[in-house]
Image (tube, rainbow, N blue to C red):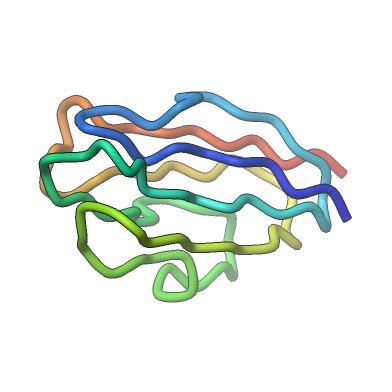
Length: 94
């Protein structure tokens, strides 16, 4: 399994677009330099994927969320506190 890192930083996810293979994981890591609180919220996913399993708590620093992607398709995430600026698209290939 390959684990990719996504930074949860003040007003952006880094990177904002990511392509991975089915069965790989993403580790969302909150930056130690954050001033604001953020969350990772799954907005849209392939059919059958439960949103709650891909949603984090809200906080500023020291948090992480690691999830494995088992269903191919496109996943859209946002920080619900900063929905206009913090968006992430993950494409999962077979």
